[in-house]
Every structure is written in structure tokens, then in C-alpha cells.
Length: 383
Image (cartoon, rainbow, N blue to C red; front, side):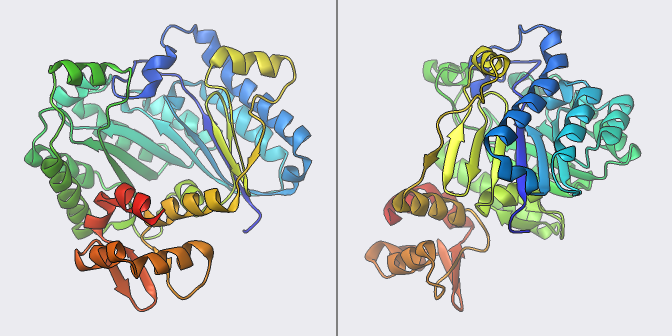
């Protein structure tokens, strides 16, 4: 529906400090267990404050509820069930896709059954790798065997819509090891797969280790070969490559992912969450204590909503459309379509076509696999 909503619940609680991501700087490892118990109720409070500030939202049905951003599977399922129930009661009757990001070690039989009772319909499982060495470097708490066990536990509990997340271009990882990881993931018969190249965030241990030479970043050629070979392997296995990093069985695309890439309304809750509502954008404070203090004072914990002007909306739309398999309709005349069509007539646009980075079919054009590797650079050229 054109007027439905997607909600994103950002849960930055990690049992470990991911050495490659910004959660390391949030230092949530030392927070008491009580904060995990209280967290769903605080999210429900934020949702109630949002409806006070934006009463029109209460008339809109829900398409997706997504719990992500850290380790939501460490939350108590009963608290999440209460949150889901409270949120759904404030909106018209709907049956949203409810996704929970989870680590394999949290998906015990009892917890999977509890998540199913809570209303979770889809799990996104943070596999990352099937290799002990890589999991240890990423400070993951699970081993390779736990991955298959988690998948079986989820299905036995009735949660059959499963996505697996993997990483490539890890330190010392070879192309053969990466393709073996994908083979093992495909063998588990998931409905959806996502894979991401390792990035080195400033201020994290991985970036420091790279800087001093303790680990080596994958070179550009290896990175590209891992991406290209990985995408082709999944295509041959029957997956639809619908977004630059996302692959799905027919009919199993992530509804929440598609909301974001299609520029549909997504409202975020929790510290650090971002929201996109029409042309308005806002975000919550990253600091957990500030977020809690605002809620305690009855204040909606968000920045003042900003309205994107035409140029920023065009930039955002180009970024999103470049990452989607549908690409652009050259004859449609919408701002992003017209901008892309005009750019194709420039020397750089013609070079991208001639180089095989863009393919045309009738009045549609989209990036190829090789083009997706260069999507950031091509966006800069278009702007």
C-alpha cells in the first residue's frame, strides 16, 4: 500500500565489540542486563511519543517491523512480544513482515520458539563466515557448527523465512575460501542471502591493526573478483540479485530492504536510528544515556526534522536507484530518470556504457555487476 509504514528498531546491544564496526565506540558491552530487559518498553514509549507528535501516522497500517543494528536476539522475547503487540494495537489491522537480526549462538530451540510466539516471521542470521579463523578475528561468539544448528532450530520453531549475512575480503581470506563459504551457505537452503565487503571504520581495532600492518586489507583486484564470482555463484544457484548486496529466492525479497531502496517511509526507533518520512529526515542521538533521558522527560529523542530540497532528493534517489536491479526508465521523465538519461549522453556516460558498466534494454538501463563495483564513483560523476 502506498500509505503504509515500515518501522526500524535499532538495538545496539552487543555481547562482543565488533572490531570492524562503529558499535565498538558505543561501548555497550558493560551495560547491566537490566537495560536489555527495559529496552523494549523504552522503544514502545518512543513509539507512543511519536504518535503524539505525528498523529496522522496512527491511521497508517504497518508493512514491516525490523529489529536490527546490533544483537536484538539478546533481548528477552517476552519484552519484544509486548512491544510488537503495543505497536500493532496503535495502527490499523495489518500483518507485517517482522524481521529479527540474530546471532547463531542465540538461536537455541527455546529462544526460537519464543521468537515465533512473539510474532517474528523472518530471521536475518549473522553468519559472517564458516571458518574458525575468520570468526575469531571478527570476535564472533559462534563456531561454524552453530550456524547449521541455528537454521534447523529456527525452522523447527516455524520461522521458515531465513536470511544469512556473510562478509568477504576478510584479512588473509582467499577467493577459494570465500566461494566455499558461499557454497556452505547455499547448502543450508536459505530464502535470502546478503554479503558485504569488509570496511575499516575509523577508530575501530581493525582500522588500527591495518594501519600498523598487523593485518592487510584485500587488494582491489581480489575484492572485485570475490564480489563478481560470489554474485555469479548465487545467480547460478537460483537467487535473484535484486540489490547490490542482496540476493533472494523468488518471492523472498526482504520487504524492509525494499522499502528503503524504493524510498518508502521508514521510521526508526532507538539510539542512533534514522527516519525517512516523505521529504523529511531526522535521526536519534547516538548516545544511549541521552536517548533514555529524553524519553524519561517525555521528549521525542530526535533531531529537528529536515525537509530535503530538490537537489538533495535527487542525490538520494540516484544513490538508491543505482543499487537496485530495476535501474532507470529512460523515457519516464521523473527527475532521477531524466538526470540519468542525460548523463548517459555525456562522454563519461558513454564511456560507462562502452566499458560494460551499464546495460540497456529497451527504455531501461541499469548497472551491471562490474558497474555495481563502481557505483560510488559513478554517482559522483552523475552529480
